[in-house]
Image (cartoon, rainbow, N blue to C red; front, side):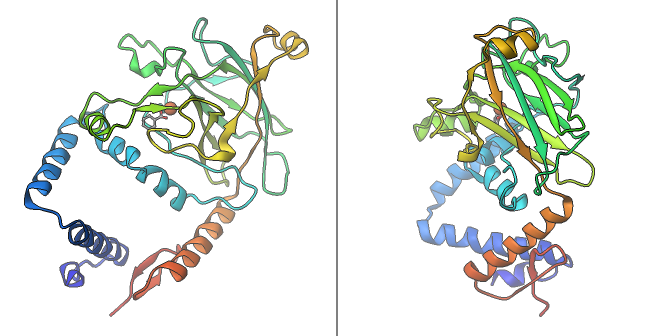
Length: 310
Ligand code: BEZ
Ligand code: FE
């Protein structure tokens, strides 16, 4: 009885999580009729995943990513009410050294790829502009590499922060993103190879949008029609996050000192207050549990299930 296994855990949330984990692990073994030899292979694989982790390499997160667990947990933990821009997984290439840019600046140095202008507006659920929010964006260059993947990196490139103006608007120059493979020279890459899955992500640009009082939005935009749109190695693509590029045209090219045949994307974002995010999380949590999970549990102050006091 797995309830007994964890019965001395004083933290009710931990108790609930651990007892569910053990229940599902046991069901997994029972349902697959798992053999000792097969579980030895599993243990060996997990051992190699752990041994591959270093200060700068997190193979366990990568494993969670390719199993679709990272994007699932992100969606459960950061559900968005209707009308809000949805989130997706962060990935390992965000850094904290991105520089602040002025409206209309480029976050990419010369020669990194085909120039792209992004303009947009940030609003709340009521459609009101949000001023002074920080938009932190990052992407790989035309070689499919983030700046951090170059051994001679001497500072941030293809990443930067811009703040929205009084009308909630932002304008930033960057480059057309390129599809790239996730790190696949370790055990997770071997797993993909064994099950005949490719390691590629469709071309995308990552965004973190933040303003005090609002729920931090971690998301990414994906290039519609990319050859990996329907087979992202880490399952991050969601239909509302697809974008299409159009040629910039003479007028904008002149205004922003670019070429008419550079690329253009108009992309608006809608973020929610911390209160709206919390309300949405609690409502979705209660609805899901009620409709899908049998057994005894209660809800804590965050609307998350906990072991019922017995
Ligand atoms: C990324 O989009 O940067 C990413 C996400 C998951 C694994 C590897 C890379
Ligand atoms: Fe990425």
